[in-house]
Length: 93
Image (cartoon, rainbow, N blue to C red; front, side, top):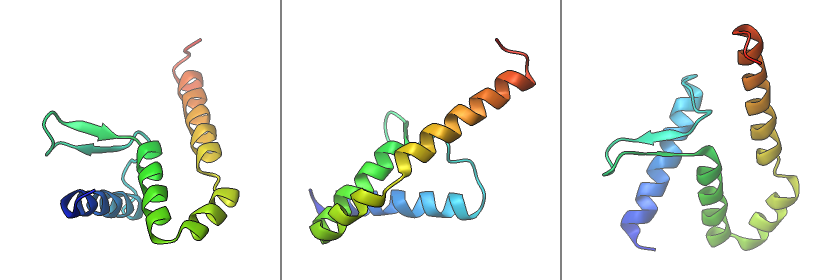
């Protein structure tokens, strides 16, 4: 992977961090309108990219993190909770 791709990835991580800190919506990913065609990068993809970069830096730390990483559980639970709330609020069966 080239330096430009690494910097693009780090920029994506920074954008996710900034949106989260400023309480902007991130549940459905981060839009990348500058790409052609415009895409939305999902939180799961960003999480995977973060783990991959961590593995480059320190494989042992990445392995250790894999034992305590709750990302998939939390994301799945929150999505289900939000969809349930919307269905109740708008009387959707």
